[in-house]
Image (tube, rainbow, N blue to C red; front, side, top):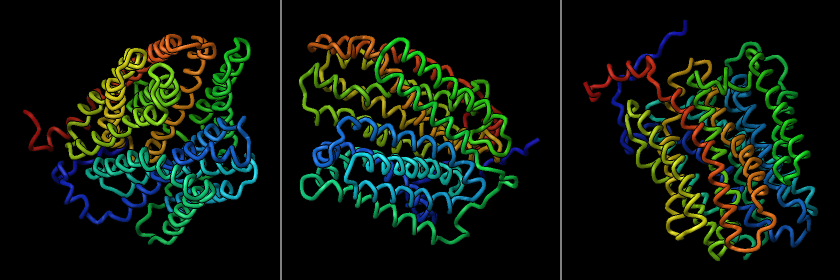
Amino acid sequence: MTAQPTPDPQPEYVPWREFLGAGYTAPLILVSLGVWLHAADSLVVATMLPAIVAEIGGAAYVSWTVSIYEIGSIVAGAASALLALRHGLRVPMAGAALCFALGCALSAISASMGLVLVGRGLQGLGGGGLVALSFIAIGALFPRRLAARTLAVVSAFWGLSAFLGPLLGGLFVEYATWRWGFAFFAAQALGLGLWIALRSEAEQTTARDDTPGPFPLFRLAVLCGAVVLISAGGVRVEVLRSTFLILAGGACLWWFLWRDARAGAARLLPAAPLDPRRATGATLLMLLCMSMATIGLLAYGPLLMTLIHGMSALTAGYIVAASSIGWTLTAVTVSGSPERRDRLWIGLGMTMTALSVAGFAYAIPHGPLWLIALFAAIEGGGFGLAWTFILRRITALVPAEEATRVSGAIPTVQRVGYALGAAYVGIVVNASGFLEMEGAADAAHVARVLFLASLPLAGVGLIAMIGLLRRHPHDERLQMSSPAAPS
């Protein structure tokens, strides 16, 4: 039987001054830069894409610049926990940063869209690895009582990227060249990789897997194939084609989960990753469903809003960015909350996010614009309330040997949810007449169907959340150890 951890004898509330002076500045910079590179790069590239196509062509492959990046992120994220268990944090994080730098460098010197896509694939591998390893580092390098403050800082960087990403991309296109945009991120990633490689060994976790065996490349390839097939099934709605691709992708995903569960020490994911009866499975299933339910705003929101309400693309983009602002503000505001309130914030946050999906079903077809922005802020704010405490709670509930896998799986499952959700909503909007829209009324109908069809996914996410929120022995220990706990 695994020994239960003893409660932290220190006060639960950690003031910002104490957190910033606790001697964890270097690890905090490390995880913040890792998240910044991943989050900002995607927005910078999206802003620079018109200029890239105008110079080197390849308009038919624009969507691939996103898809290949996401596929690389998912594969790298799935592999990160096992890499950290076998090699510690230093080698995988340095490798991910250098892979990202190489991908940016290739894109910067590209003379064709083909080489840009190769670069985007390497950026996805590096960026996805950096994010997953940053979550692992939060659990490994920081005491659990500091985790919420750390995640609040990370959330702030993520929100900052929502504004600076498009701004930086526009500045490079306007005053220099898109190639310098890639070079700018290549230099940051190279510097981060060298800094990690030169860090003191005492500041890094060490490998804990005594039976490494061969690395599961075939399993990762099957996962990659599953995401590609399911995503391709949502691009164009043709009954036979879409059904075949989605069923084939689903079969690959099932095989990956089945085989991974039987891989012992070489597992990529935690045990029973989608079983709602277990805290880990409930957490990952909740995040998977919530990610699928909320991708509609990012995937189709700007286009539908411009068609329905006649707003500019820039205005639509910043309405979507209100989600990131809400995430950042709530995460920073509640990050000092004691651990005994984790269940409250998780439940409230996920409920807010689910309600925002219902709100979009009305607000996007009918307006006004401030109401759409409000629901976007509520959606992101709900994630911000919950996200800060999901990692802290689940890592406290699982055995120590599973904490690394769970930490790495959380952002990876989120990306898988976005990929699967994009395929799902693609099928929904195409089936509801997206390709035949002739005016604002047709676009409003598509928007209504899109978000109503996303509601069941949010509902499943809320049901799965019960498995994380139900009382565990850990909660009783918190109540007994906290002088501020209610009697």
